[in-house]
Image (cartoon, rainbow, N blue to C red):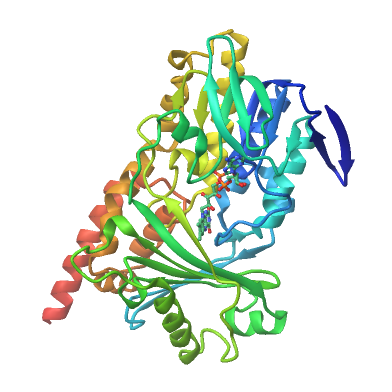
Length: 421
Ligand SMILES: Cc1cc2nc3c(=O)[nH]c(=O)nc-3n(C[C@H](O)[C@H](O)[C@H](O)COP(=O)(O)OP(=O)(O)OC[C@H]3O[C@@H](n4cnc5c(N)ncnc54)[C@H](O)[C@@H]3O)c2cc1C
C-alpha cells in the first residue's frame, strides 16, 4: 500500500493484489462517518474511512446546524460559516408570520463542502486512514472477518464495518437491513454567493432564517438560510404526508413559483436567479434494525432524521459517536457478534429515539392545514418559543411534549373565546 500526502489529508493508494487490513472500515465520509473515524482513532483503533466521491465534495443540504451540535462537538466551531440570531416563520398564505430574534445564536450555518472536508481532516489528524474516490459495492460477513469489496476489484478486510453511506446505503442493503420505502422527503436546493450588502439588506446582520410552512400547498416547507457570503434556498416535501388521491406535484414548478412570490414580497432581490438547483432526498424514519454481525449503521444510512424539519447532522454525529464507543468495546471484548453490537441500538434509542418517534408521529401534520397553527404561534410567545425550541433541537420534544400540548390547547381555547367577543 502506498501513502502520500496533499495538504493535511493523507491519501492511500492500493497496490494491486495486496489486501488492506483494518480493525474497522467506515463506509462514507459525511458527518456520521467522520465522527465514527475520529472517535475510534482517539481510542487507538486502526480505522479506514472510505468515500466514493473525491474530497472536498459538496452535498445538497440547507447547512443549518442546531446549536446543540456545537455544545456536544465543540471542535466544529472552526467549521462554522455564520450564525443566525433569529427566524421568520410564514404561514402557507404568507398572511401570518412569526418573528423570533435572540441575543444568542438560534442556529449556526455551514457550507457542507467545507464542513465535511474539515471533519475528515480532523479524523485524519487523529490517525485515521482516508481513501476517497473508492466505491464500495458489496460486503461479506464471515466468521472471522468482514470483507469489503470495491468497484475497482480491490478487497479490504476488517473486524467491523460501519455503514455511514447515506440515504441509499449499500451496506444496509447488502445486510438486508434496508426495506424499500416511499417514506422519504424529496427536496430541491440551491446555494449561491450573494453580496454582503444584499445579505444585510434582505436578512439583516442577524442573518434571519426564513421558513415557509406548506408553501403552495406542498406537504413540507421551504427555507432560506442566509450565510456569510451565500444564501441557501430550498423546499422539501414529505412523501408520507402527501395526499395520494391528488395529482402528483411538480416540485420544480412549485420552486419556480415560490421564488417569484419571494421576489414579489421583497424577501429576495428582484434579480435573484435560479441556478445550480439540485434535487436530493432524505430518509424520514429510522430503520427497525441498525446492527448486524460485525456491522453498524449510522446517520442517514440508519434513517436518523427529524421528520418534521429534516435535520440530520446532529443525529449523524451523535450516532457516529455512539457507534464508535460500542465498536471499541466490541473489539476490546473480542465479540463483534450482533448480540454484542445490539447495545448500539439501545443507546441511540435512549439518546434520541423517543424524539425521532414523536417527530415521526407529527410528520402526517404536513398533509393537514397548518394556517391555524402558525396563527396561534403568532398569538402566544410561550407556545412559539416551545415550538421553535422543540423543532430546532434546543429542547427535547419528548420531554416537553405534555407542556407543549397543554399550551396548544390553552391557546386554542383562548383564541376561540377572544374571537366570540
Ligand atoms: C436538501 C437537504 C437539506 C438538508 N438540510 C439539512 C440541514 O439544514 N441541517 C441538517 O442538520 N441536516 C440537513 N439535511 C440532512 C443532512 O444532509 C443529512 O442528515 C446528513 O448529511 C447525514 O450525514 P451522513 O454522514 O449520515 O450521510 P451523508 O452526508 O449523506 O454522507 C454519506 C457519504 O457516503 C458516501 N457514499 C455513499 N455510498 C457509498 C459507497 N457505496 N461507497 C463509498 N462511499 C459511499 C457519499 O459519497 C457520502 O459522502 C438535509 C438534507 C437534504 C437532502
